[in-house]
Image 1 (cartoon, rainbow, N blue to C red):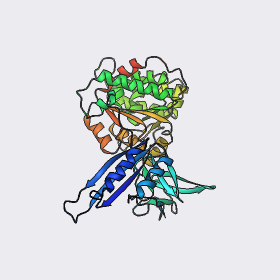
Image 2: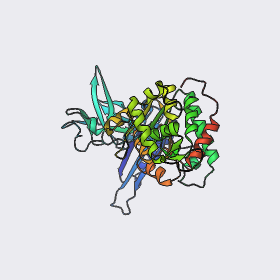
Image 3: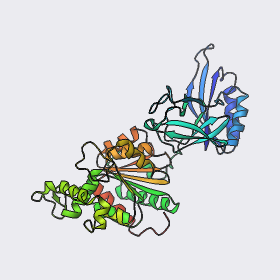
Image 4: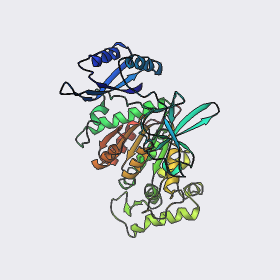
Length: 412
């Protein structure tokens, strides 16, 4: 669907202008509308204002509808987007258009062009390539002096997200954030979405926190990776370090994963594990030399599954593969976003929010945490397509692995 916001202003009720415009919108098959704002005048002198979101199945259909309602005084933007050069590296022009994660178009030289690599909280850079104009989101830190950036809100169209099917399990899951929802049913739904995404040739992204290792759920993540259901892994130093600790010492945070009790000098294990990997040159080298023979990171290396380890100020070590420059880490993550159809985020607040900020609204997002605040933060920061599952990560990982126990046989 493509869309345009139209505006009616004046004595549009008593003159029947509103009724005429709504009749026109209703007469077109493949067109629907929603009144987003209404201000009704209360006296003879006061005017009324209406903002109506018009959606159509094609660009040509939308243009025909807009041309007809314009005859009745409907206002909408046919102006080109206003472009201004960035004043210096890393700085947008004043009043730059700040993007959402919804599908967006900008009007340049009287043509609507799609904004590529859509991502929230960025600017829109426009450039000419041959005979054609292109547009794409650009993070603030990556804009260069002189780049043409969209300024203001004219010449911009945003496609609203599709309405959720009220009969779907996810409509029930997404109604509010609560721990009092059927967990097994929710996990079955996640597994089904993973299957659908893989069948469409889309990638499945997994974002994980160290609690997956602490709770003993690491083997379930290994199974999902090994069976081809996960195509890329985002995590931090902690998940990788404790996963390697578990592989080398059988502990996580110094607690035996078999006995569930602290072991003597166990608090040193994670730092000793990091030191061992640093000595060998990295995780891949540890696998190749036969030092690291199991675990999540071992499975990623063995099966060629790409991963991005983004660092933080509190990291021990860190491991050689951890990207300590946050801007470089963002770019590394962005490189894996194209083609993602489903993102599963488990037990990590900061990495979930960071990843959610990069995902277009078309990606189905599942956020799993035993703390409702994590999924609330994700939706509050704009990732409105998130489906929350408030539960223990060990339960979720075990159930998901059971639902996806058969290896993926298609082409992911």
